[in-house]
Amino acid sequence: MSTDLQKRPAARPDRRPRAPQAPWRSNIGLKIAMAVSGILLVLFLVAHMAGNLHVFEGREEMNEYAHGLRTLGEPLLPHESILWILRIGLIACAVVHIWSAVVLTRRALQARPVRYASKKPAKGESRHAVATMRWGAIVVFLFIIWHLLDLTFRTVNPVKDVPDAYGAVIATFSPERWPVTVFYLLALFALFFHLRHGIWSAVQTIAGPDTKWRKRTQAIGLFVALIIVLGFAIVPISVTFGLVN
Image: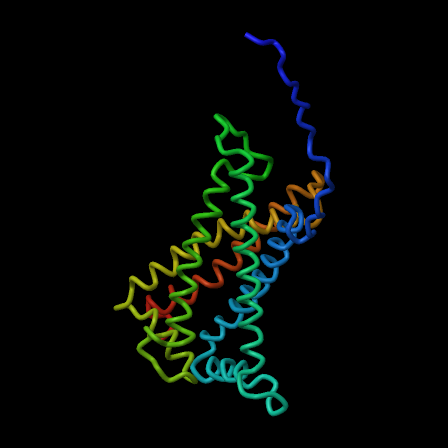
């Protein structure tokens, strides 16, 4: 056998400079985008919860509040223009929030396709926090679709008269439609865990993992989540049990 073999040069590593990744596509950028969009959604939930509590003032006050939202900016702006600007902004925040979460999850799975045999949760994070956030987000997303069809577009609501917001709330949570109330409360239960961990995580992302503020941010996340969920839950419970009619 001939030993006159042609030697091949060793493969050199590719040292060509790679195009810099856009900051908003990096993991840090995506986490910040998810945190900021999440905080904006939390602020909307607080405002929406406060608006729902007008139902305890009676039909006239509730409908006047809803009418004020639809006519905000008139006569300088067209009817419901401000309301639709807010809706589009909320949709944009929701899209950014979901898209960031999906991309970060896929990158985490690609970086570690095999799960750890034992993963110790970080301080302030429960062992099932990731699963709670993901499945809770799906439940909340499905509820938002139902909520829009029910109380925004009135597709599945018995009250089709748009100005009668009070009547629509009473109709959707009436005793004979108790499955709707149960679904609403289950969605709020999922929202509670999502908010409790999400608020803490958003503060950690923006402000940094300061151990001094760790317990405080956990307490703030728990308090805000509890207030929002209780504020939303009191309306369907009161209507279903006849405290508001």
